[in-house]
Length: 101
Image (cartoon, rainbow, N blue to C red; front, side):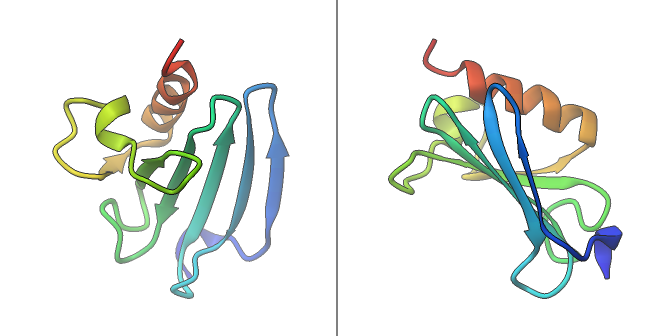
């Protein structure tokens, strides 16, 4: 199993709610971040994602489920961004939190 994670985890910060669970494909993990500004981030690590088991793939969405990745990250060429280290993920989450301010 990738990531070595088998359970579910909820974490609340003063900026977002994060839920982590096993990815629906059966391998890897998925984190869903819900921000106070209405944006959501899906972050996954699976053998099939852009980053495989080692790095994150993310997508940013509005509360209605429509894509927001290219609006928050204008240099992105797709609705998902891959090959993100843990450190870079934190930086990107901060950017999502600050979007629209």
